[in-house]
Image (cartoon, rainbow over all chains, first blue to last red; front, side, top):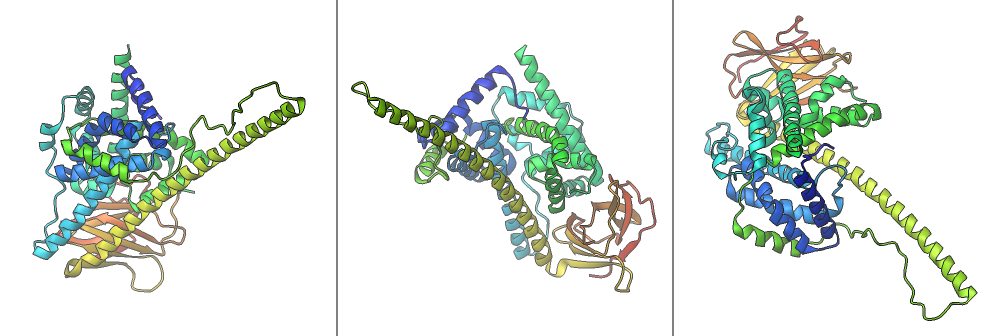
Length: 202
Length: 274
């Protein structure tokens, strides 16, 4: 798997793997150190997806708890530790989004409004919550280089968990166009960010 | 084996990585991954999207509430881990204290015991490796099944939660033979379950395309391919109002779909009064 490659990340990845190995031996202190190192990313991702601090906190709690329970399942050949953690977090957040959709629909039915419930509150508010990290800046810059429709399609899939048909309907675009747009956008994003990581190495 | 072209499969790879494929897309993609040749072709694509996804996932950080750390630590302390893990230095070899020069018999016995320990350790490591591989495989299958169950749950929800806002559109001839289709449109939710029967298989570079005739213009709703038995059950996004929607129709198109129908629809069903 291709991962972020600059030197600091590689050192961090080594330390992360050591912590997970210690967690496999039942070392709760290692789990606490993993939390200290990545809670900002895990909580930030959950908050970005859910736009609700209380829900994000529950997702982060579940994610670290699951990482502890399943530490022995971590496979370094398939993902970095942070990639593994964020995958767990996204899965938990998507579960919460789908559960929220169900709840909102039932509530709307009970109130007789019948209005479809919009997901989240948009992305504007999230910007106030983020920290000024180098990685965030790099990704934001890379995202800005994508065409608007490409970026929007990726954000709907990644942060809201919408399927291809749902995105096509939301954007009123042909399904095939949406699929192609997301694929090309993700590949371009990977190339842009990998290129930036290489520049930092030089 | 998947009926989709490699290009169509590549377009599903981001959704596979992000966990946002529909039931049918997931079935097609996992079926392709079961084919070693296709899996080898798709692997670089999957890895590229995983890398991009990791960048995206780590791009946003926020300071969690201070109390969360204590909650996480308390939760961890109260939970057992799923598997007792063997440490890397667990060779199974036991060091024996030696106080004096051992006799030849004792030396021979120790060498035999040592050799047996090494064989035991090697076998143990191999078995652990096999168990880990089996666990990974089971985990992958479990993830796929969970996603399929979630998709099925969505389908059932669409069918059962529509109440008086369900619109049924039948496509096909009146006789009981030949292809047919039913669209169960949950207007309130803006989603529909499409059930097709009797569809013949299409070539690898072709697909069926479902259209909605809205304001006298065809609007693409979904691309789909029937299973081996000619049936298809899929979930599609549709408007939250029937206003302006006169009919649904099906054509056969190139694998990537068409912006406009390129043939006369062979299945048509009008949207009647609710």
